Image (cartoon, rainbow over all chains, first blue to last red; front, side, top):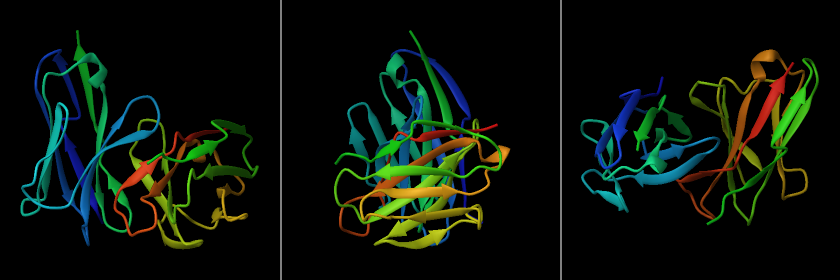
Length: 108
Length: 115
């Protein structure tokens, strides 16, 4: 059975801090690793990673994939209160298998 | 690229009733997916739909569920004889236009409440 595990489950930081969110996966016929941000309702697409060692960046967010260790991290630098959300990672085979998410709270 | 829209945003139904949830693509996508998220739980895959046919379905997607694209545009998820445990957010997602894609973009969801 495919499995995606995220850590930590929750994280509380102050504005300006840097955070690292972790995602490990065991997905048969793995194709890619996706990160989403979920605020009140639907997951919003952040990144898709298919190759090891190539960092993807979008503003203050960056992510990297290690296909040997079956692991990905999502970094957020200079956090803002608007970054408060649940961050989901999902392993992609023929469908997405989601982790439980990391609840990030950024305090002013 | 824009996502999909979903209607209704909230549906309340009584146990045993049938509901139809709709997903409206913005443009001509080929890949669609339905997921559900029970409150406080993980997002779970239900079914994928490619070129007007089911391509994958999960164990959750039993005979109670069906999908179709009745008019070649809107994409529906039908739940027959709803149960209390069907209460959840139901998300439609689309793949990237016209190609095999691993990226999936989610619609805003329909909150289904079964009483």
